[in-house]
Length: 302
Image (cartoon, rainbow, N blue to C red):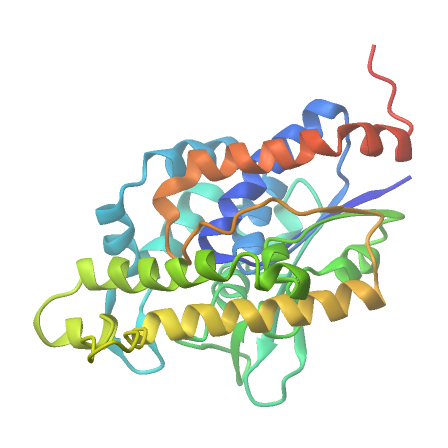
């Protein structure tokens, strides 16, 4: 039986994928094929290349200021950050040069900005695939590839279960990083989501200066009214809501055999400096499902 792993989108939350993968392997799960979207593609490509340990070691060392430097915050056509250093680091240190040279079959998902179609990368050079899959709208500029402008795959397919099946998987384990935006949980965790908006605005404001601060910081409070969120808070929360709704729809139509949903509602869009904590949360989410996974895959640990 061929086992597939579908790693979902979720920006900084995606460091949870590291702990999830390691915990699955420790359970005895033999993953054969991998499909990733956005940060799921970033981590998934490293795993399929046999370099997850190198990525993990680097991610654990990140500080807030290093994240600012890697993102390259600043106004530019198409996005608020370049992200070039992040993707250069991935290309040079964490990933095989092409899909064909990876240790495991791997697929990355992006979105055609103008047609809205799902774009699949599964051959040739890997660099454009990762950048396109991670091109969060408004944060990163779209990526031009073969005459098309591509953005984050999360716009159309945040958890690419179908792509694992296209790679021949008989059994698919999927990771959904946006479970906290389910309708029944929205009211319960509304305050947490609002705090995350503010954290994202504060994070961007901290790394900006002068003219740019007015774009990232919430508006001044007027009388007893609540302060409107800043541009990044609006963008991040809107994307999370969109992603959660698309995820529910896609998973309903093509459900995985095992669905892993780590609880990450207190994590802001750009809190990449919390990698070790997030990885541990990912590991814990697998441990909660350990018996179910062992039973469904008939794993007998002596």
